[in-house]
Image (cartoon, rainbow, N blue to C red; front, side):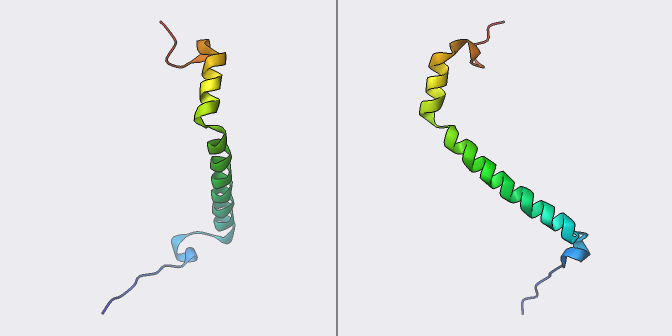
Length: 62
């Protein structure tokens, strides 16, 4: 026989306010990640590198 263990949010110490904050920041992270991923395409990065070659991270000579 298989036994499942389950804890409620209150047993874990997660209040309704904290749960709301966790869910809202999770949604915000997914939306922000989607927007930034769309802007970080190869063509956009290559165009930026051709316009400003002195700003490259690997181009800094010490």
